[in-house]
Length: 337
Image (cartoon, rainbow, N blue to C red; front, side, top):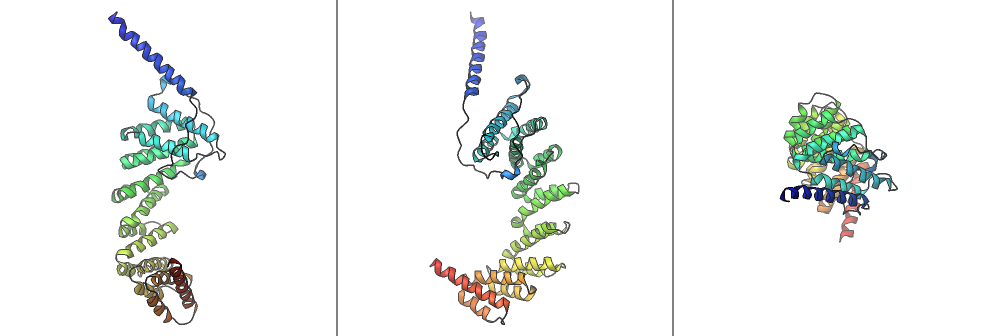
């Protein structure tokens, strides 16, 4: 009798599991969840929802792979019932909660198994889930995650996923992310990832960001990085930033950078900022916009001083615009009171 007891218990356990899975199959779709903790991916970034997937034999699928498959199938079914045909807030929350529940050690395995599923049957929902898994892996082991992603990802989602992962690493450990990106083979993909890392460095280390951005090929994205970083630098050392900017050879870039510095300097020393704008920027729209931005902020802090400075201007467009800025600042002040 005692020898048969384990055998009987095993049969009962198997029957219980079978009943549990049968009940789960008849369960209606989950109700909407709470608002997400992270912003949902824009609908335009999602590809069309594919048809229902065919599961392989259960014996060939381990638990994590089955969980991934079940989640994708469930979310796809929910999406198919939506008028937009794209994942909504509830679906985004459902996927993010699944990813957050994974242990750090499960993330590489989850990424690999999901990649195999997507290779067999592409899925917009699967791409979104993959992006979330890789982003979390980047937080826990950025170098491993990005190395795997560069070796494994294919298709339309590759660029956006790599760029996003690089930006995450840059926000968490700017110096390490920068060193990693600099050793990549040259090319457009590496440059895009470096640009995303540098974007995070604008507020972390603006001087290092400027030095790195200068080495990039001249184009609008590089110039925007330099301009933004120079403005951040001016928040701590405006005169140093202005002295450096005056040495830029490209006249268009020099003007953009000086404008950014002047506007930022206006928060701490509007007189010096306004003089920088008037004396270094070429006459035209950029100078007008810069002076107006400085005067508006200045007037909110010291209306009389701003008026006295504007009164020194000779008649012309810039004085007229500055006077309009003063009037607007005064109007805002009256409304606030």
